[in-house]
Length: 178
Ligand code: OFO
Image 1 (cartoon, rainbow, N blue to C red):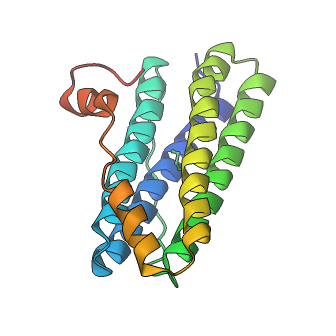
Image 2: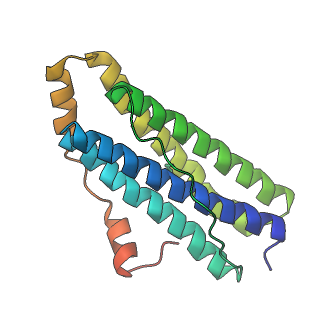
């Protein structure tokens, strides 16, 4: 049986992941307004990634016989000064999520929950990728500064991002998230 402390922390992380989706949906709206469709595409897919993360936590709680709880989602930021400002926010947010996952892993370890600890390893690795992806875009933005040609090139590049087939399978029920 899953201990209360671990269950509470896992449920709290669902809220963090759904908030991530909400934040990136809000950021997508910002880029749509700027007509930067590639940035908007990258964020549209990121929203799905975050909802996938949330479902992964949900599925795990169900598997452990726990109760899933949904909490209030706070209002996300609606506008940023420029693309650099937006992606600084993405990078900062992903660092925050990494901290949340690390704290969660500490709780699982302290509570002697080896299953939860192992489950969380997927997220520990995922956060390395999440931070790296955000940082790569941020570095490119710093490189081109406000040069319209550079922004155009990054926008084109981000427009290539495609949804992970694992997420499509999860949405359509072709596989479980675990
Ligand atoms: Fe769920 O990793 Fe981003 O926030």
